[in-house]
Length: 416
Image 1 (cartoon, one colour):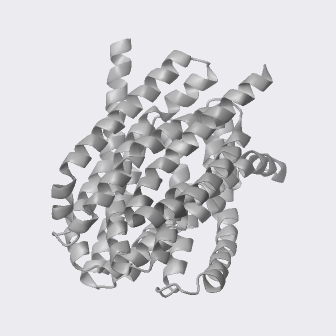
Image 2: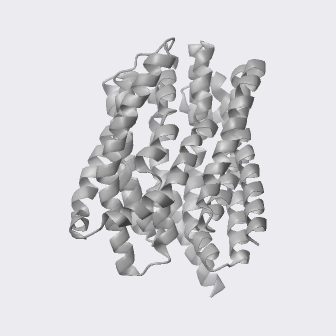
């Protein structure tokens, strides 16, 4: 039985890994062409506006998929279908309304508080913001596949989305030479096409009757998670926004390239986490601590091995992927890659906290940690410039993990 279970794990992780790896390989293959057609300023623009995703993304999707994860093993088939129908409607209507509000809020912020910005605002801000709600149905479908251990469905949808994104990147950046505009437009069009397909594929969910009270329950559960996730911007987006203020556009562009190179590691960590996420939630629901610790440890070890390999091969990787144009980004890529390990530890801890019935601790954790990051980042950047900003990305997740563990320990002691 154990051998069969391990074979199942290997099968699922291979499928999830392939679903992430194939689009990544295609993107890596065309990356030299994209690098040849993108200037440091183009990278700086895409990095600056993309950094806001971590701030407004949680508000637009409102962390509703975490509620789906939590309730999945507590419901029968009909209950899951009913909940999916509710979330289908929510990420279609609610998310679009919130995205409009976020767009004007960011527009006002940039024009009032960031008047020294060296980049134009439009159309880059619009491309960035409105790509997010269009990804709602895609993420809901992937979550349903993952929790149901339907790795084949997960694979097909991920591959389709990834291939479309690669093709549009080549079309807009390499062929049409639209630079930063094309780089930000590609995800918007990709999300729109996939959204249209999934909307018609699941349109029968519109017939399922849901009540407003059910949605209110989800909002109450997700509100602290959403507020906490917004503050997660300070661990994974604030560095890019703050470093722009140094006024060195070229070096900022190298920093963004390094961060994007290290970002490819998230493909590996996400595929590994996707494989074990259902087991972690199930282990928590059944109070199986042995399974919980084993799966968490396997995740961290596997992700660490990938990071060590990346650090060793980083110069060669960047030389190939940027056609030798952005070798100065190597140091940033190496440092930021460490955050793949620290963030994995934090997300495992956070998932445990949420699934254990302490969703408000997520908000408290991010509030406390964000304050600390806001205090430390300017000091570190003042001393070490862009390198300091890179180290703070990894250190931010250490702060988050430590704060979360302390708060969880205190909460359990008080509950006793």
